[in-house]
Amino acid sequence: LLEAKTTSVFGEYGKYDEIKCERTLFIFAGAFGSQPIKCTSDLSRLGMKNEFLGRVGIHINVESPSIQSILKCLQNSALLAQYVKYSPKTVNKTKALEDIGNIITNKHKELNLGLRLINSSIHAYFLELH
Image (cartoon, rainbow, N blue to C red; front, side):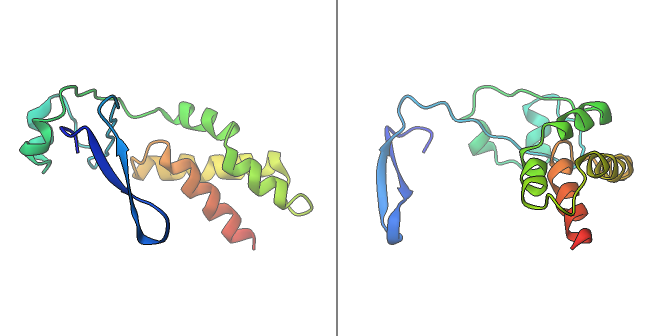
């Protein structure tokens, strides 16, 4: 895929559609269980295939977000907005933000999930309500 000018993607009703990919920027992301990633050899040590690493020329390491950054992102969560929109009689947004913020703060101490912690905590909160 990374070296071809076209590729096939799954289309409608089990058919494959050919698309051009010669001028496409591919971005890959992954989490490696809170292991520090400083260079490509770290990725190899953690199990990423060397054949794949040789085709990806740029590697950027992003630090884990702080709890303050995660809580700030919670304020603008589209998922939370949807839950509040469809449960207006039973959900107080201010109270939900406080409760979900507490869930995130407690889980962040034991799990390093980054921003994924927002959606999982929102779902957990609303599943407990209903």
